[in-house]
Length: 104
Image (tube, rainbow, N blue to C red; front, side, top):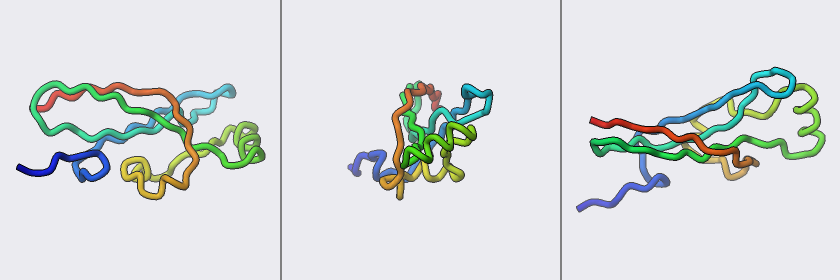
């Protein structure tokens, strides 16, 4: 009865994670973005979120962002949650974050 929900087709609630930390110069820069759907079934759930960071497209942009301490970042968290239009954005994998849910 019913079709199982998959992350690509599910419209359920999500948690968007943005991780920031200091770079070599002490500037607060983005360390990673990720999103996960919130489980609906009661109980304790653990999810591992793959994190990613946006990348500059050219060597000049990479050098300029390193030199100025301003790295590319998303201004709207919906970009991370929807994934729509993200296929044209260059990103690099950047570790994982593990979250636990206690659903009642």
